[in-house]
Image 1 (spheres, rainbow, N blue to C red):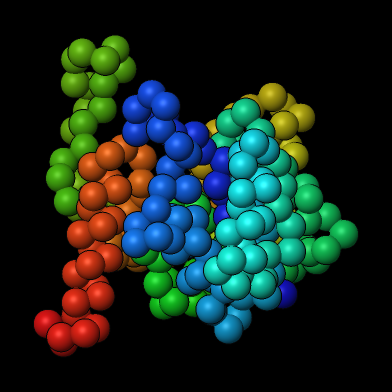
Image 2: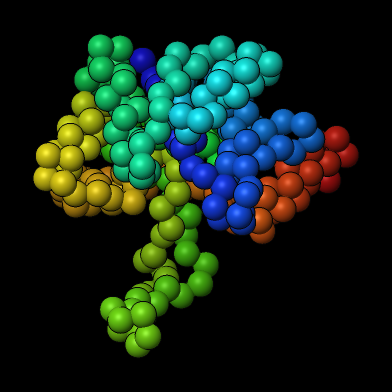
Length: 238
């Protein structure tokens, strides 16, 4: 089986004080999280969806799932204090459901412009390699600083990629990695960093530039512009 594990545990802090969680922001009456979930709901090879959600918004999410006809969500799991914790809680909740060789696509609830092709390519990459990370080539030079002031290194951008999502794995591989990290009291930003920590080979799946993550207000307006452009392209063929 193939699972989508959707992380929707973020808060609205990046959008300013008092903002609602980013995944519940609406565009044309539909929340961002629903735009995201619909891509997995409509993909023929996704069998189940597990959502990790802010505990305070689980009831709201369940109402939205019913309202918008999202039927593949089998579990809604309360999130943890960090993204690392939340992903682990989602994986742990799948014990007894998922088999060792099932595929899990870990995706941000606030990346609503994922495509059917990218989902399929992630699944195929896992079947071939075991661990697949969606990436986008860096379009500008990346500098490194060890003291937040002086530049210590400038990387060759021809060899630099930005890790995005989905980040996809065989279930046992990624669950074991998170359980090991928890035993060793190590926290990571995302699953790609976790695999790097334990020298787990990963392979790239190329993403389009449209696969944005909504973190700050500018991202929301970029999502709106891209969504409208894609809708116009379908309607007018432009």
